Image 1 (cartoon, rainbow over the protein chains, first blue to last red):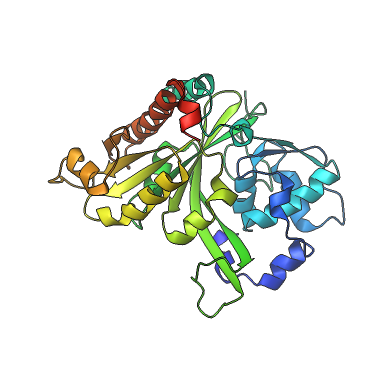
Image 2: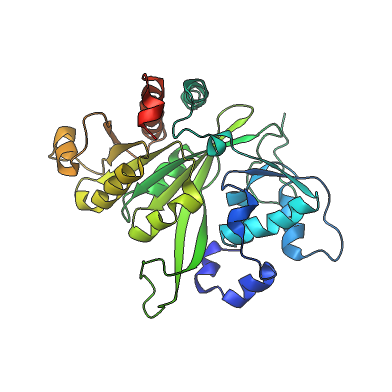
Length: 119
Length: 207
């Protein structure tokens, strides 16, 4: 599915997908939170949920799921919140997004530097 | 160690390591056509993906959607790529336009970003003024990279003056099409962050 399909996305459809919920900010999910499936898709499950469970058999970020599903990030966060509540996925949160300080500590940045240098 | 075959029904891109646990963000901002996606593609381990965020909010003071007085819908499209840095760390590199509505979504989408690369077209420096202003306003660490499409007459020092950049902010030249050159831009940014983070009392003054 092309994400550009979103350009003319019908708000009613987004409403249906999320069951009318719109509290993406409360999910504690970041763009780069890594999601991992903890169970298989079940018959009769909402198709978006089933797709997430299939894709996230390996760690997959929220933003990758958004691109794969062709849905806005906030909609995906709401879908993920359902799966988290039911224990069907787990979330690995980014350490930098939860830090109090604007700048990460030097040890963390050194790891980023080493990783980039090895590219 | 990892199987190269993709899962049927899964996305057609290499999966992350099973040990991947910590996502990191760096954002490349710049005007239309300056080469943001080109840079993301040059260093990414996956073909760049794109997606959107939509926000509907009452009385936000941004009037991109004419006629919508009470509810303003803000849509921002962005590209991104991915670089596995080690067993746990995964860097996501976002390419995003620097226009007004983008900054409006900054806190929702890009809070916790390590830092920002402002990608500048030497012939359209004015496209970058707004981004530089917003980054300084938000106190987000950044560097400026001039994408070299063709030989340019102005020095990087002249670019610094044109953008009215403070002394401490690195200004580098790059070829966004080139993997090594784009990698050097990211290294310059993280070097800058490292210097800021290591400096005595940096962490207080930066916040």
